[in-house]
Length: 269
Image (cartoon, rainbow, N blue to C red; front, side):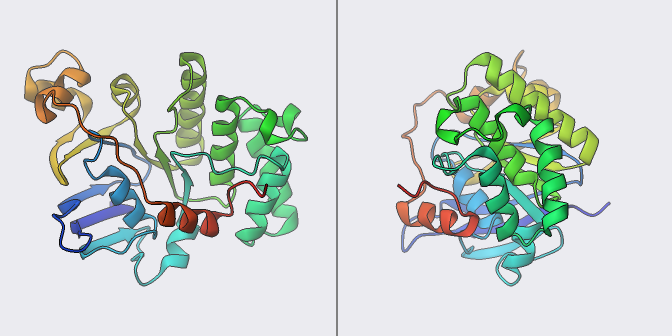
């Protein structure tokens, strides 16, 4: 079966600096839950930005649901939903209004949109809070609403960039339960990043580990543990990437503003 998501020899440089992503190749099968792991500054966020049309590669090729993000960005955006690492909901709108706004942006017909919103609010257990302002939601509730928003236009792929960052264990467990259900029931391909190795081991069917811009290992969690003679995925991860602390890195403000223009997030205060 053809890959639904594929990168070949993907490279990204900023000016004369060393490549942030350096000759990366991987593919994701339809319906797969794929974990993309790496230390801070390894190239994860830059790779996701290229996959989701926010950055143009310096070289290499990408296919998302059969389309090249550099030549068919609109088709690629319709093929995926995304939950950003940073919050992107409008706190001044209700849960229902956030979903309505997203559906209108994507041109989902009114009747289809309203039925889909009801379905998704039930999926993420927020039906009773649909009229509540998002500013009143807990972190876990906001993440669940962001997942519902990302699924509104029936995407084939859902990108989750550290979706459980800052959540307590109960909220994390609840959120991953929803992800498992949508993967099983709707066949959505899931591409996620996380620093919680237990999450990756429990959720991902396949894992790629990127470090210093290069893919250094790929396989199931069990295969990576066997390869490194480790008794946990965290042990395998440390064996492959080392114990040295890495500096925290993040996307530029310009890139975040671009993302919010594309997906309509952010408060209007």
